[in-house]
Image (cartoon, rainbow, N blue to C red; front, side, top):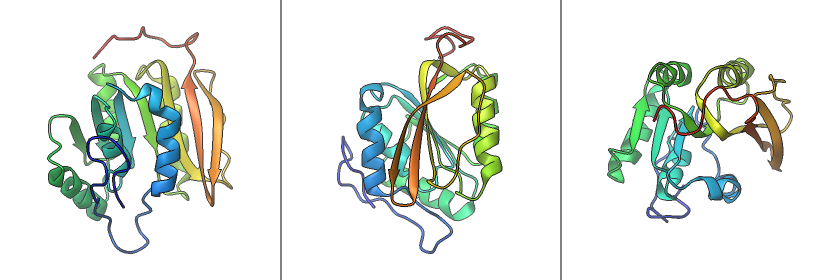
Length: 196
């Protein structure tokens, strides 16, 4: 596994052995960043269920301003910290070891708004998908026109949400799918630029 593009291009990334961790493939990461490329420069990015941190590190490599990583599994968390340390990524990255929901609740409390969110829980954990997406749809955490990208099994239909988050694109590769949601500017509860 490696960083695909940007200032860390071609740098190798460590990945735990075994099947407990399912890093987003290089090919799927490339597809993801081809779509969100116009929005990445300077973005406040959240990599939820970050695993090895490959997606968030790719975002930083391509010009994201800041990335929040959420991961609470011991071995992936160690690997994530190893990858950040090896690339000497410090000031632009914050790691939340309690997991996705504690991170999101803290960001709401601190009035930090996100531009881009990548959500990739274990494919079988449907409750995680539902809980995080509902929180993002209902809480004042997204900038106007924020984008939420969800990696999931192509066989899984994501839950219907309120009008705040609307799906606008779906890409399938093998057994995986990416669904892109956009924050609805008509229902967003805070103006762009507040809270950062």
